[in-house]
Image 1 (tube, one colour):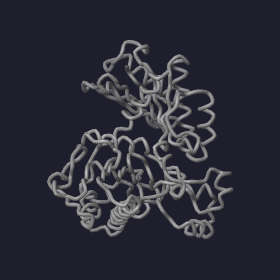
Image 2 (cartoon, rainbow, N blue to C red):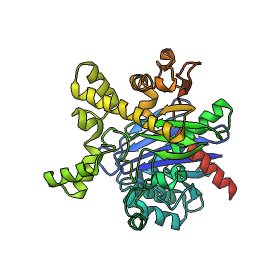
Image 3 (tube, rainbow, N blue to C red):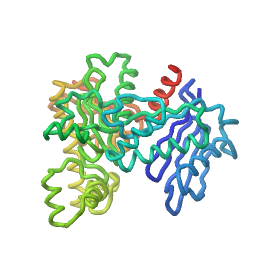
Image 4 (cartoon, rainbow, N blue to C red):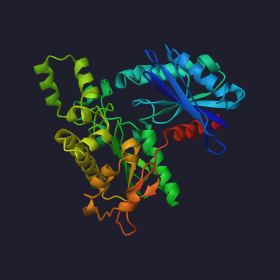
Length: 400
């Protein structure tokens, strides 16, 4: 069975074609700057062949047509017919309180995703475009599945996901914590259990998905009990361009003094804050660490804030679960930033954690970075959201 996994952003389309018989990635690629000048598509195959082109990509349907052609034609061809693709799996950021698990695509599902766009205005409309693009190319005979980013967090208890506002208002506007990156967090704990050969029952794990967007999740018995992102992916940790946690009064204070509209305020908090806002020059953790090491005080402040907040969330989740068995790092920063992991783990000695500095000197590798006598295991596990989506898609299609 071959599953095509699609992840659409507002101006991008990522894809992977995965052979589910051995979970091998056959081909993968990216269409970017869709609907923007300078459109680009690139990809590579399992055997190392690569391609790149700069066609005009006015919309997601056109972009998906190029994906189809890349799979079927040219030097990077990997299949002879679209019939070889059994199903398509889509990532959808926000399923709200409506969906707590992956579902087959139906007209009703598409309508619900559209209704929830207010909770993810940059993402949900793009996901619908991706679904519609696939339908235009494949027709209605090819099954499609949507995997919701927040579904893994649906097990949070009400006291963890509720905001301290009148509950009739909260229910009227579906105003509560939903979280994000759930597909990644779910993959990480399941992969940990697979490597250890254990059941998740009885385990207490903290997963740290750290990248341009970052979230930390407390997972008890394999189920999420709390996560750092809120009603949108703006809440929680300081991120590449997002502010993370901020006093609501600071937001209204800035609005009043700067004369911002709600839309301008959202733009500011989502795109002009975080590492970029504090450092004044870059949203990339690598740039900030390099500048810090050269004496840039604002870059030092930005990195120190992130290190501190990661430790603080970990500590709070240890308290929430009354202990922890393992801490897992993933995402672009979590998997590749040696200084970040060192700065965080070195301050967790109160948990009996001991860092193996030699093991930690790695990037993008699945490895335990705590010593054998550490009271808590610390791991780096590269996340694989696409494989998690493909697995859910396969399960649902086979159950039909």
